[in-house]
Image (cartoon, rainbow, N blue to C red; front, side, top):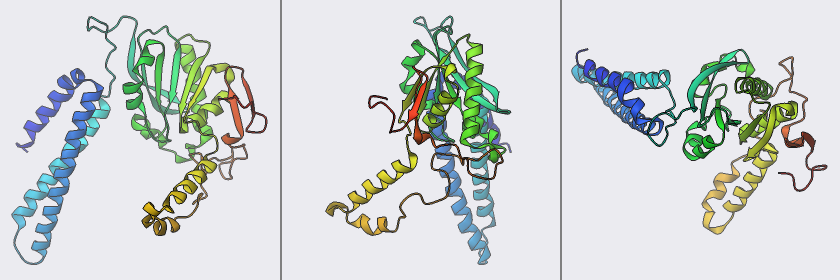
Amino acid sequence: MRKIWPYAIVLIGYFLALRPLLGAGPGALFEGMILAAGMLVSIGALLLAGVAGIALALGKPRTQQLRRRGGVALGALTLIIVIVGASQALAHTPPIRGADGRPLSGSIATVEAVELGGVRQWLIIRGQDVTKPVLLFLSGGPGASEAARVLRFNQALEEHYVVVIWEQRGCTKSYPSINRKSDLTVEQYTEDLIELAEMLRARFDEETITLVGHSWGTIIGVRAAQSRPDLFTHYVGTAQMVNVREADLLIYDAVAEHAREPATQPLCGHWRRRDRPPTSARAPSGPTQRSSDGNTPSSRPPISETRFSAATGTSCSYPSSCPSTAG
């Protein structure tokens, strides 16, 4: 136990003093390196402990080595658990600073929890001016977070908007919200989104907000905009999902065609063993879509059949009645 205390003191000092100074990017990189090193140490110690265990089973006394290496593996795993737990408990977003290095007056930079659909979900909110319009970003997924990429590559948005990154059900700090897997439906995600939009509109005193979706986020984004166009000033789809099943088929056929080229002939045999999509009965647009009784597939038309224009509040069937210039 006495050997653990120095590491515990270092970890406490890091999370309470050094981590806030490093900021989100360098802090995540440092913690990732420590976690990777801990995993390597754990795996190595477990392998060596396994060898010692086999030797012990064969009658060769290596009890001391087994205990020592098992202790190293246990210590490394404990270190990983502590780092992950502390990282989540102390998650924060650094303040937005002015030219003088001090937190910018009138800005907002918070990580906070809200209740959506009866469960706790998390938001990252950042903006240089809290009176600016609200932009709600919907990550791809489901179950994934693009917060790191948005914060790193789209930071300029904070000059013009209050940027809200929603960590959806089953994603990062919102992971515990999947306590009922029956709630992981397209309809429930869309209802959560509408509830969040209403909440943000009231909190920041805005009549409407801007909605930006990426990949999976465009599915629930379009559904919300179709259901409640009064909540949104604009809808912006990036990597817009139109027909997921058709996209899977196009990708499959393109790769299969590529595998037939002379330079990629070795792929042919492997590719022929792959079934053409869909390979399961699960809905291709994300979480299983269910009707209100929870038993039968929903009869609601798939998102691929509609296209929405938030600017005009109109929708049309795709592609038959949509203008060719629609985005």
